[in-house]
Image (cartoon, rainbow, N blue to C red; front, side):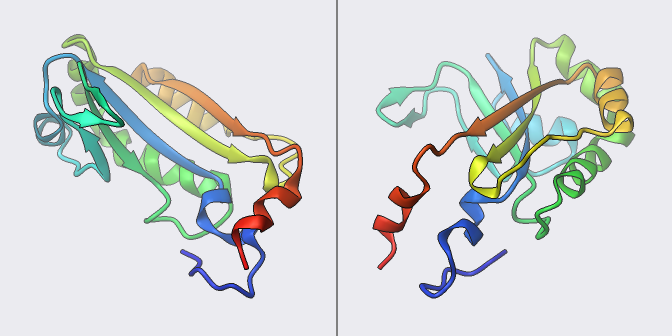
Length: 153
């Protein structure tokens, strides 16, 4: 992960790197229970009843984020890493979905990196489809790139 260095352009900071996260939202299971079911530790979570941003969570949120594990800017590396975590857990993921879990793969892209197109390999789409996992692409659009330099001096 790039370190914060005032001499580096802001676009090299991790906020602007392509990244993915697996997100599981559940109305009754807590994040530690989801971790046990998936046999995966989350990188972040919110428990039912926990206050987050001044709002009490009515559902739990369990997240496995690629950024700390994948240090490249290649989106496919992030996708491959997350899918590899799930490919041997097909029945477990399907069982979790049957309990009412919403499971999505979020792809986070920032226009600062000047992505002209987002390529999701067919093998990734096929695997996610077989698991019943939806794909959300979140694009952060910066109209005036200079505004971000105000924060770095």
